[in-house]
Image (cartoon, rainbow, N blue to C red; front, side, top):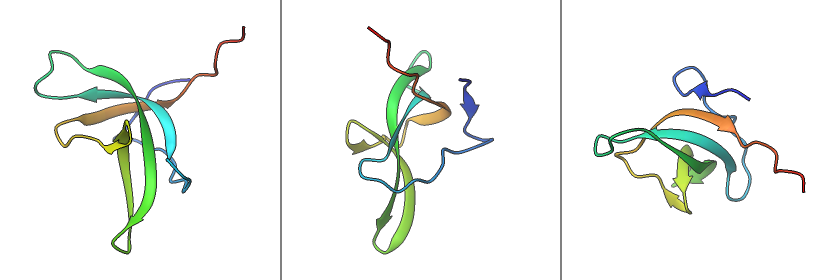
Length: 79
């Protein structure tokens, strides 16, 4: 798995409950360095318009957060 630049490719638009979960790199002017987070890419309808957006902990991501890269989550460890 490799990081995908958000300017080169967005995650696929898959409509499903709670979106699809990805590992993302996020920057913010208030942070010293970029953060790696788990977010959902959601494709939904809002006021009769198709919308795609990032969500974090069931909330729409903060406007100050800029997602720069994304990747699929790795497979869970086998125990």
